[in-house]
Length: 276
Image (cartoon, rainbow, N blue to C red; front, side, top):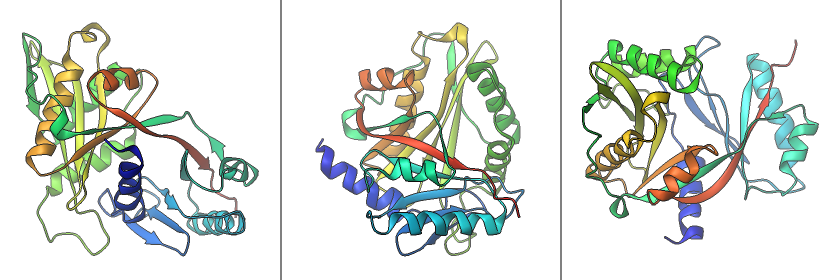
């Protein structure tokens, strides 16, 4: 895999030409910035800057414009900075503008054709697709046990809405989300022990792998690997050349062993709402 070629493709298709990834959200394009905003203060979509093409001369003004844009909405937002974004001191400029950095993650990418996609789950484990709100509830339960905290209310609302709306074409307005989310549970003895999802955006070369988590007593048995293979097979069957995931320090070595390559390090910079 040619790293520079893939990162350029990712920047173009998944950042600069991004489409909204949640019901009611929309993508806005300014001169130097691409952002996503939600439908309102109680909506569930992620909000923030997806891509920026800045220089030392344009960065400060663009940052100020984004702060003003979201201040007018009265909302917190995130500027997702990739390690190769310019200018090189963009993180310092964001800190100076009141943004707080979060934990870095690594974008891990693999070609679907290079992954093992016929990996059965461990004995006694069945993979079940999530098809309704009850399934979303089970997914939330697994998340709580696997990650030690509840699924955010915003994400829970978003997933419930997406499964309720389905993936029917033509039911979203221009600029709104047009993709499909597919979630899957790993069930052992009637108990959900792991869960994950994949985002499939029409026309994009990359499918996103999200939310993979396994309860503590089932870790190290191959459940996560089976869920990766399941989702990669689904993406490959629908014509996606690549799958990617934002990996923590814990999941990065697992994905590397499965054939994923590190593409970029990302850091979320979050700006609290500006008091008005």
